[in-house]
Image 1 (cartoon, rainbow, N blue to C red):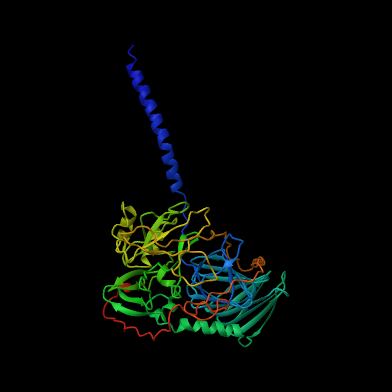
Image 2 (tube, one colour):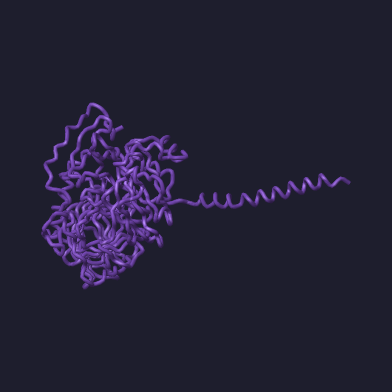
Length: 530
């Protein structure tokens, strides 16, 4: 009998077995890739004003650090305000003001939910608009305050006697505790005491306190903002554009905003710092007072040697991005990434695709691009399928637009980079950091580098409590160490001593001239209206 057919059959079976074994890693990898991906939130909170000593404990961290102006805040982040401090937070169309000696934290913050803890002190909450699917709720040690309508509210906590005071200057709030539920309507004030059983005294509102008057004065900037004519009011930080730049009409893009008082070598994403903030990863925090909206929304373009910010479509709800940049050379990525190696980045131009480095779904890729520039789905798809998706980026080869830096060698998932000017004035808040610099094709070695300091990942969140459900007192928030807090830095060029506490809004720019935007041309669709 000829054994050749049997040998051939055995060889075929062996080849099939080996082929199947070789495919197993691929199948396992595909299975891993098919796991459910959860998109990050489309909005954050911005720390938009700091006066006095304000400390931050990022999500998942127990150590307290000095809070930074313009830092994005998200679920799990906590703030402590010292006895001389006040702060302002912006979350879309909602603004929160915090009084001295307040302990505040975000339990959950996403596209539709703002759930916060206020365990000490006072907070003023101004809600410009409240959608049908949007929930705003504040937990205190003995009550839950749910905002039912747009309006102006104040919540005060007295932990010594387990008391919560709720004032509604306008709107309507529901206060719950145990099995009880009470409504505080417009121009009413409710005093709520007790833990197991909530006792209520509701009557006319008392006159405004000094803190409420300060919060009202701060909120008037939004009401009078000229920039709201050109961007959505859900773009965080738009009101700061009024005093630091001018709006002008450009036929190719519609209305664009041009900043004033820039350094000669200024470029977008050059003067600031990189922080590692989960779940997005590397996040840009700009040094400029106005440096939030133009670096997390829209696009940048250089027109006649002047950098201009091009906002996204005004009628589309904006989606936050950690930094709308492209990367050249070594990509930052996640753990490890390009740590310790030079990295080059540049601002994205209008119509260009933003490719998030964090985990996301195709739906998020469309939302974060459609809300920040005029672009179609086909262009987004091509960017994800092209071999070199950044090859056509407008600013990639522009030495004046590209900035070079070096990300730190990361010892854990909780490391950051810090970008600084050079030369920099003496500062008492964060002494870590070395500058980034613009990219010169003749010298690929960065002349100024980045340094590191600690970030944190997003912690677990808690869903809002349903009406009638027994209240769970807000957990006590640990205070920062009682050691003297570092003084707020004096502004550049000021004669104020470094030990003097100045409002951080006190201006990076000289006094601004009046804003006189060009009249809107309604005869044709603008870039933002297409």
